[in-house]
Image 1 (cartoon, helix red, strand yellow):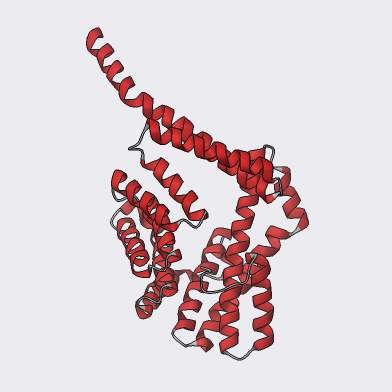
Image 2 (cartoon, rainbow, N blue to C red):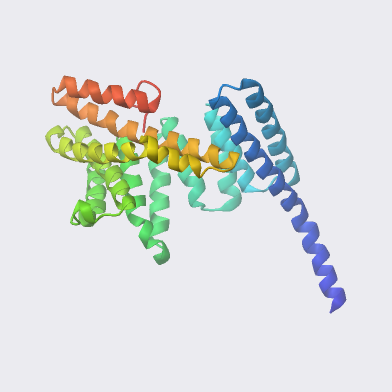
Length: 303
């Protein structure tokens, strides 16, 4: 028994040691990449470039130790996408999916890449596969509304079957709209904001701006409320005080940038509806706010 156990342990060690080493290199690569982004945000290009090179070297090491590890391809695909090398990113997402099967996270990220590549049909197909996976597993029941919203939104951005998209988002909102706003949790309000934006944008695309503006007004009101909480000096100072380590600061800044981008998309969509309704002054104000939140001029590539 001792001999069998020893042999089994040796075999497992031989099998798992390279994968464990690869995981360490992958963690180091991700850490260096985050540090590069952090230093770049603070105009320290020398440090940013140094950590970027270390990140690439560590990721190459991870892949050399475990060339069949989907996580490394998933991470590298994200880096390719950030560098606008979209075909390389797609190849890595495909490889990661091939190695791991029907992975929801990979399809989620690949669908965003397909949207960037204007391959809308494939983006919707990935979103549909994710929704079907969630719907077929009872323990994921709570994720169904959010995934259905994602499917409807991707249909809208890609102009794919807008009437079906409207049907899907109405299904998502059916229960949530029955609950008074004051009874919703902060998370419920955040979801409602995004779902209203989805339906308003779909109605805009269907040339129904008078209906769309009701949803966009509500979404914008919720966005302003959230934005005030995020940017209020006292609130921001309190959250900054909790960022004890550098990693905390990196995550804080990345999270804040992501939130601002999401709010920017909502105000951009509302400006489109206002323009269609000939409310030029209000549309211009929303577009200006969207521009400041997004950090660039909004256009159809924003989603």
